Image (tube, rainbow, N blue to C red; front, top):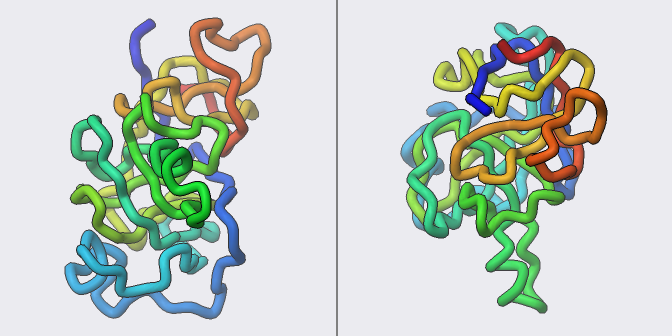
Length: 198
């Protein structure tokens, strides 16, 4: 089945990460992709910090979260690539909280865990901001605008999650119904499509 796309204004992401976003917070002085705090070797913000702001382009609230990126064997992600909890971290750190370590390697992610999207290219083991909820944050990160790659199963009103291989940067339908692709695993709902992909 060929990939398809859906416009940024036609998806809404559910925030499933622990913690409540700060609605009084401000964006970082140099923006969410600023070099002083985004894609950096040492965390500048507390990992797991969430900021919720109103996006004037998408006309709704959007939520950012500060996470650590674990590369795995996947390609370096670009803006709009989905990431999920890194399962190698879950398996090897039984007594350490790993709620905020994410990966885009389809073989290493927890498909039923929370999903976020990369807002710019990330270096492995580095810290930075990710989009984790609400409308697409186009006003704050212009690279988040435009089409998102899907597996061509999205329909209006139906929920989506990451595709089986998030290394391909796709989002896919997550419930079993008449339009559900049998090759796609049923995974936890991460957001909703407002129209069908095209």
